[in-house]
Image 1 (cartoon, rainbow, N blue to C red):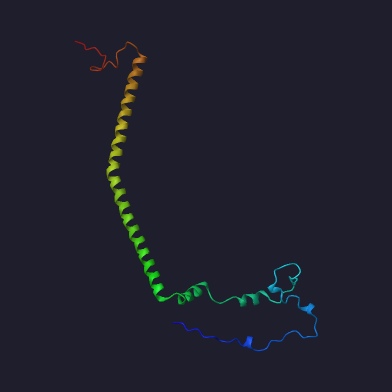
Image 2 (spheres, one colour; image 1 turned 45 degrees about the vertical axis):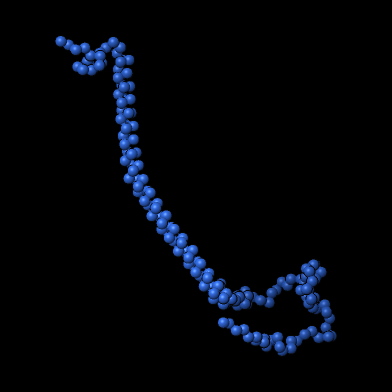
Length: 167
């Protein structure tokens, strides 16, 4: 368990130099303005030349990363709660994994079964459509030849429809 101990800051304990009584208060226009709502009268003017450079600002940035801060949060959560969170998340992830495996296997069975059944059926249907189309084309040719030569025998071949048998 973490035990907290108060450490006094030495900069806060020692006496800090303050304004002399002889100086005018006009030099310190920004004192006390932190507690007042912002208005044009109590906002100090911006200074053109900043005393901090970019390097100084970069050095003021914390050296901690977001991962370090997240890892430090584990001390704030009690171990029993952490254990229950870990168990629950583990159960959820394993359920999702088993569900995805089950659905993947089911999808494989359905798709291969569909290919085994419907592919031959579709091939037979397409073949039947080709045969029907060929019969239509043949009938159209016969009709075209009868229209071209009305009264003539169709082809003159023995056994052809409309052909006379010679004896």
